[in-house]
Length: 123
Image 1 (spheres, one colour):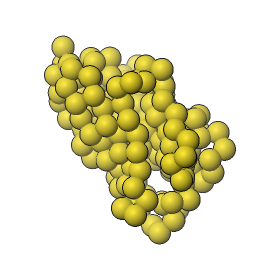
Image 2 (cartoon, rainbow, N blue to C red):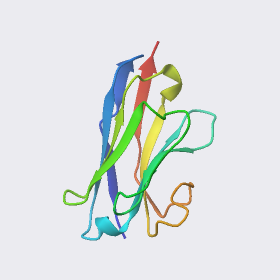
Image 3 (cartoon, rainbow, N blue to C red):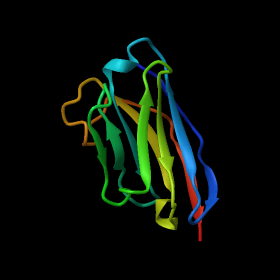
Image 4 (cartoon, helix red, strand yellow):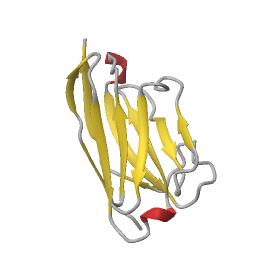
């Protein structure tokens, strides 16, 4: 099992940037696919970006392509989400999640979830 703790959320003006971090416990971080998800009020949780355990494959939702970058540092047990050119519609609670396998890593079917961090983008 892995525990996940997100950080880096906050309030930013439209056009600004934030970098989210997700620190994982345990010594098997490098075996997990990792994903970032978000959920806005009244909306379903959606995938934002995901990365396979070795970092060889990356997925982005169309809404964030070209603006967000996911990366991971397996030596530090951490996955990141660099968010640039933020828009008010990016406002949501952002969750980090881990998956035991790379299979279906672009879906919301993840095994372990963090508590989330709020991102608010003002216009």
